[in-house]
Length: 316
Image 1: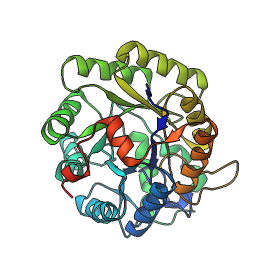
Image 2 (image 1 turned 120 degrees about the vertical axis):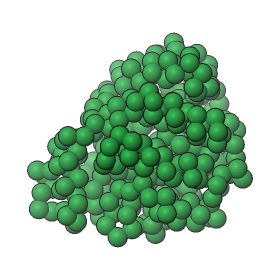
Image 3 (image 1 turned 90 degrees about the horizontal axis):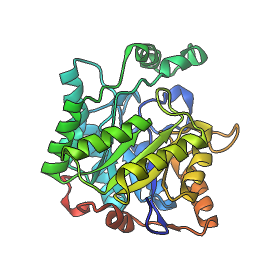
Image 4 (image 1 turned 120 degrees about the horizontal axis):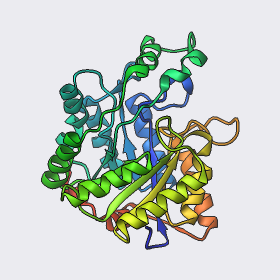
């Protein structure tokens, strides 16, 4: 739980599930990803969560060369914590997928990476009828169609490797992404085996296909379960997809959570109003937090709260 009035705002810049055809404002090129991330940090985000996109087509990629463009320029221009995904979709055998998803985190050893706590069935394919014929690139329809037959794999073998090679060997702190109540029990299970150590940065996620819906009672249940499993040994954060982003992060903050917003999670900045940047969403939730008399954590506050190794100890 949050033991301070300082609230960490994470901004998730682009993700991998939204397509360029879904919003003209979705950051896809390196220049757009960097600009969006810097603006979010300037608006109050102390953590920037990064996925990579092919510079020419905007297709999600695991290429470390693309991440290097982001990381070097962002480190020069912001003190925000840079958090790399380990959940980027990739096609291939389980071994090829594992290697691709870990390539950039292993190379750059950032302060924080995501750590997905179980298999997921995201469903961009469900949006295909809406966007068929309106896509900007041929890969978009192919990507959505293919997602119907893909489960996001997060096996125990994968978790063990992430814990050892990123956590134990490179000192990375984890954002444990929990899409369901069972994911909390998985975290408790691997913690009992000594793979990961508290305090845990638990990201409770709502409104994504394959996970918990965006209902407040689910949020309450998630907190109660985390309290029961981890006691005081966790830092709680909340994110929600789409139109529920600000509503659920507000409820979470009032109950003691950190918050995450950004274009990865929602393309909206109000009813019927497309968000033009992640910074716009950061400003919205910051206004809510300050109205609740909560202080916004600086990047160095976030480092202290999460116990990261510091920006001087990364490989970029």
